[in-house]
Amino acid sequence: MDLDYLLDFEDYFPSMISRMGAEGFIAELCNGFRLLMDVNKGLITFESLKLNCYLLGLDVRDDELACMLIEGDLGGDGALSQMEFCILMFRLSPCLMDDGPNKMCTPQGACGGGGDPMLMMNVM
Image (tube, helix red, strand yellow):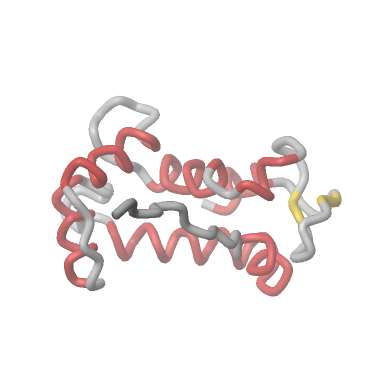
């Protein structure tokens, strides 16, 4: 029996930005970061990610958790800062990244000049 591991991915970020505005969206990303971070270190660590996945009822293998951290770890310290987390979330959104870093997508997927993803630099 062959298993089909393909998943449909729906990018909700554009509709969230449309409803919340760019600053509200960035604030929501920051809330997500705080949910996953180690409160003592102020970073998302392997241990904090593993614990929070368990608490959220997600069954994620250790190698998958490590890959998540490696994907976003720009500083090479094995953990994600708030900035690294936000950058990773933008990179993982196909629509936000389709037409370059200075455009955001509408919920319909057609990109317009609705905002600047680099706004997060000013919001944090």
